[in-house]
Image (cartoon, rainbow, N blue to C red):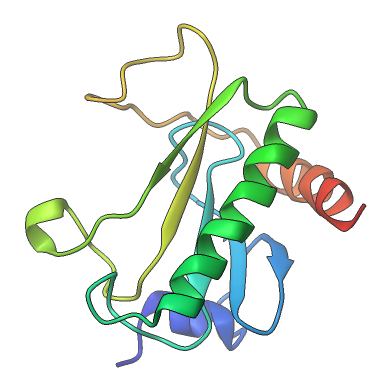
Length: 137
Protein backbone atom coordinates (compact mmCIF):
# COMPACT_ATOMS: atom_id res chain seq x y z
CA UNK A 1 0.00 0.00 0.00
CA UNK A 2 1.48 3.33 -1.06
CA UNK A 3 0.26 5.88 1.49
CA UNK A 4 1.04 9.56 1.86
CA UNK A 5 3.27 8.69 4.82
CA UNK A 6 5.13 6.01 2.83
CA UNK A 7 5.88 8.68 0.22
CA UNK A 8 7.19 11.01 2.94
CA UNK A 9 9.42 8.23 4.29
CA UNK A 10 10.89 7.61 0.81
CA UNK A 11 11.19 11.38 0.26
CA UNK A 12 8.81 11.37 -2.71
CA UNK A 13 6.82 14.04 -0.88
CA UNK A 14 8.54 16.79 1.14
CA UNK A 15 7.91 17.11 4.85
CA UNK A 16 9.27 19.04 7.82
CA UNK A 17 11.15 16.11 9.35
CA UNK A 18 12.24 16.65 12.95
CA UNK A 19 13.50 13.17 13.89
CA UNK A 20 14.57 9.97 12.17
CA UNK A 21 16.11 6.69 13.23
CA UNK A 22 16.10 3.11 11.90
CA UNK A 23 12.47 2.47 12.97
CA UNK A 24 10.54 5.75 12.76
CA UNK A 25 10.27 9.15 11.18
CA UNK A 26 8.74 12.18 12.91
CA UNK A 27 7.52 15.24 11.02
CA UNK A 28 5.32 18.27 11.56
CA UNK A 29 1.63 17.96 10.72
CA UNK A 30 0.70 20.33 7.88
CA UNK A 31 -2.75 20.88 9.43
CA UNK A 32 -1.77 21.24 13.09
CA UNK A 33 -4.08 21.56 16.04
CA UNK A 34 -1.31 23.72 17.55
CA UNK A 35 2.08 24.74 16.19
CA UNK A 36 4.52 21.90 16.78
CA UNK A 37 1.91 19.14 16.23
CA UNK A 38 4.14 16.22 15.21
CA UNK A 39 3.41 12.82 13.69
CA UNK A 40 5.57 9.80 14.56
CA UNK A 41 5.29 7.09 11.90
CA UNK A 42 6.92 3.68 11.54
CA UNK A 43 9.16 3.21 8.53
CA UNK A 44 7.94 -0.38 8.19
CA UNK A 45 4.35 0.19 7.20
CA UNK A 46 1.50 -1.30 9.15
CA UNK A 47 -2.03 0.02 9.36
CA UNK A 48 -2.52 0.61 13.09
CA UNK A 49 -2.08 -0.78 16.59
CA UNK A 50 -3.87 -4.00 15.66
CA UNK A 51 -1.23 -5.21 13.20
CA UNK A 52 1.91 -3.45 14.42
CA UNK A 53 4.73 -5.24 16.17
CA UNK A 54 5.23 -4.41 19.83
CA UNK A 55 8.85 -3.26 19.41
CA UNK A 56 7.96 -0.63 16.81
CA UNK A 57 4.81 0.48 18.64
CA UNK A 58 6.80 0.89 21.85
CA UNK A 59 9.52 2.80 20.03
CA UNK A 60 6.92 5.15 18.54
CA UNK A 61 5.93 6.06 22.10
CA UNK A 62 9.57 6.54 23.16
CA UNK A 63 10.07 8.97 20.27
CA UNK A 64 6.72 10.61 21.07
CA UNK A 65 8.04 11.24 24.58
CA UNK A 66 11.23 12.83 23.19
CA UNK A 67 9.18 15.09 20.94
CA UNK A 68 6.88 16.03 23.84
CA UNK A 69 9.86 16.90 26.04
CA UNK A 70 11.35 19.01 23.24
CA UNK A 71 8.06 20.86 22.71
CA UNK A 72 7.84 21.71 26.42
CA UNK A 73 11.51 22.74 26.63
CA UNK A 74 11.00 25.08 23.65
CA UNK A 75 7.90 26.57 25.33
CA UNK A 76 5.76 25.43 22.39
CA UNK A 77 3.70 23.41 24.88
CA UNK A 78 2.78 23.28 28.54
CA UNK A 79 1.40 19.77 28.11
CA UNK A 80 0.70 17.37 25.26
CA UNK A 81 -1.95 15.02 23.98
CA UNK A 82 -0.63 11.73 22.60
CA UNK A 83 -3.21 10.29 20.20
CA UNK A 84 -3.33 7.29 17.89
CA UNK A 85 -6.52 6.73 15.89
CA UNK A 86 -6.98 3.04 15.10
CA UNK A 87 -9.62 2.18 12.51
CA UNK A 88 -12.18 4.17 10.58
CA UNK A 89 -14.54 4.19 13.55
CA UNK A 90 -11.80 5.92 15.57
CA UNK A 91 -11.28 8.60 12.88
CA UNK A 92 -8.17 7.07 11.31
CA UNK A 93 -7.81 8.68 7.89
CA UNK A 94 -4.36 7.58 6.71
CA UNK A 95 -3.90 3.80 6.59
CA UNK A 96 -0.35 3.92 7.89
CA UNK A 97 0.07 3.84 11.67
CA UNK A 98 0.92 7.20 13.23
CA UNK A 99 1.12 8.77 16.63
CA UNK A 100 0.08 12.40 17.08
CA UNK A 101 2.05 14.48 19.58
CA UNK A 102 -0.16 17.55 20.03
CA UNK A 103 1.23 20.51 21.99
CA UNK A 104 -1.24 22.10 24.41
CA UNK A 105 -1.28 25.36 26.33
CA UNK A 106 -3.72 26.63 28.92
CA UNK A 107 -6.88 27.95 27.28
CA UNK A 108 -6.02 26.90 23.72
CA UNK A 109 -9.24 24.90 23.10
CA UNK A 110 -11.04 21.76 24.08
CA UNK A 111 -9.64 18.35 23.18
CA UNK A 112 -13.17 17.17 22.42
CA UNK A 113 -13.61 19.76 19.67
CA UNK A 114 -10.14 20.73 18.46
CA UNK A 115 -9.62 23.45 15.94
CA UNK A 116 -6.59 23.82 13.74
CA UNK A 117 -4.29 26.84 13.82
CA UNK A 118 -3.78 28.99 10.77
CA UNK A 119 -0.16 28.75 9.73
CA UNK A 120 1.85 31.81 8.78
CA UNK A 121 4.60 31.71 6.16
CA UNK A 122 7.68 30.12 7.68
CA UNK A 123 5.96 28.69 10.78
CA UNK A 124 6.74 25.08 9.92
CA UNK A 125 10.32 25.86 8.89
CA UNK A 126 11.01 27.73 12.13
CA UNK A 127 9.39 25.03 14.26
CA UNK A 128 11.30 22.31 12.42
CA UNK A 129 14.62 24.04 13.13
CA UNK A 130 13.75 24.50 16.79
CA UNK A 131 12.77 20.84 17.20
CA UNK A 132 15.79 19.57 15.29
CA UNK A 133 18.02 21.49 17.70
CA UNK A 134 16.18 20.29 20.78
CA UNK A 135 16.01 16.65 19.64
CA UNK A 136 19.67 16.46 18.66
CA UNK A 137 20.96 17.63 22.04
